[in-house]
Length: 398
Image (cartoon, rainbow, N blue to C red; front, side, top):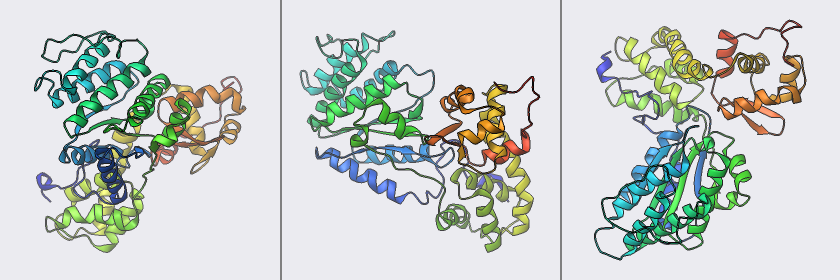
């Protein structure tokens, strides 16, 4: 069929034509917005889940909902290289300009601009906002990120309340924040919430995020809900696959749909990838089981090369061996002791490797002594492409 008319969107963070199975999370966010607008206490959201389940898509949906409701938004993806103070200066600038500090001298937005300028004095590069204004003294200028970010949140929240609006900061890959930065973000939100200000933080990250937030601030669980999203139910997966094609007059045979859902295990990204390739290979409607079988090796190769292999490219030989040992044990989750035994050593000796892989976002700890992959079907890829081999006595991990 015509690839130009292909309705599937397997790009990173691309919104699928049918956002199936996420109604509960969307409704939770709608409630959060309205309570924030009214100055009523409500837990913010940190969405967790494996790679490819649609966390970034949900964040984009939340942004659009917030902006439609009249909120000012600022969003960013966190990386290992992120300078958090600079990031917050950039995002704060965006919110501040939307609040229009030039509109009326000495209103709350004007005061927020002065606090913002003080905040940016502690960044390597200043951020201009297009008006000549003095920095506030004694606000956001201490050099302590938690204290300064709290001052900035309060100033922005007060300005938004005066404009009968609100502020939503959205962060993807929150698990990559350094502990001190995550602590500062949580503290600033807490500071603003204590003053009933219309400002909130919504984020997404890998499954270790609740643990990281709790370690950063013990009261994080009272500020955030941590909804976990995963594979879609059979009905939602069917909708995500069939609905986009049906909108263009193309049907699926029942057996074809079942085969795609079985292969993808209901993971949203995999569904979009399979839908794209089976559409391009099918000659017309309906899409048949034979079309699905023809597409299967193409989809597998695409997932292996573009979704999974790129992630393992950042690992060392020792880290890859640890991952291969995990995969050789079958499907997870895995006991860390069993992985160590497979490697011919004990858990304390391989703990540094495990910690490095957690930091790189390739595995996570479900609970004490339990580890699993952050990428769906990563274990199968490793068994196919990096099968575990027992080391010789000389090269064995020590």
